[in-house]
Length: 234
Image (cartoon, rainbow, N blue to C red; front, side, top):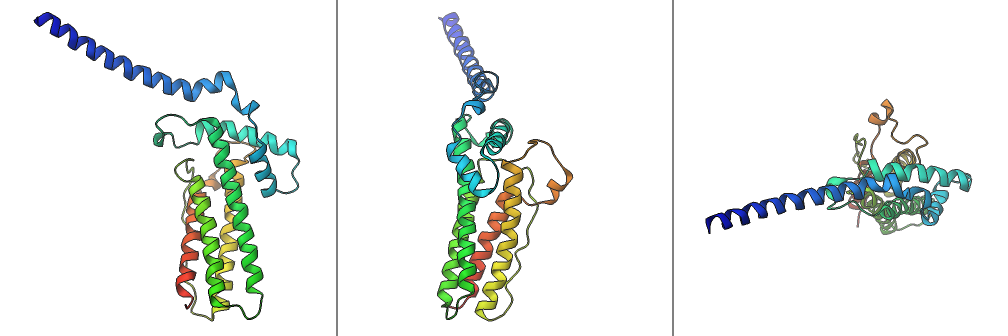
């Protein structure tokens, strides 16, 4: 009886060790087996992200754009995902989905900024319209932040100071807000280009560490939009 019990315990331990090793090997193969055999980046359908990228970057030829996307797609999947947040490696297609979401959110942000600029040049605009425009910009910034955050790694962070709005007339305050939005939007464009359309993905330059990440910039734009909403009179 005693020997039989000991044998059962040993078998249970061996089974547990085997299962742990099997899970580890499966995770390893799911992440890296693709790179050696499937070459998913060469055969993937890029149509959705290609449209989003070409809208973002006007004037670039489709073959050049496609080559950049495939090059970065491979790098991002194997090197730039927050793997510690996943139970298992996501399907490669999810990387393309998130890329599309980032570019689409940034495109909507640009549209909202353009609408806000037109609004700021009109006469007899209600303060509530300024607040609504700021809310839409903040919503786009949040969508951009959510598309990137908790999926892609931040390879730099930096900081961006959101300054309080000057005590001025509503239109002047809104124009000051838009000037700050334009500055952040330009930095976001640069970071999105560098992160997702890099001709040399993985090559690190010193200037990277002096710049702000996409989550930091988009969150700063959110906070700035919330601030202007609260400071404009009801």
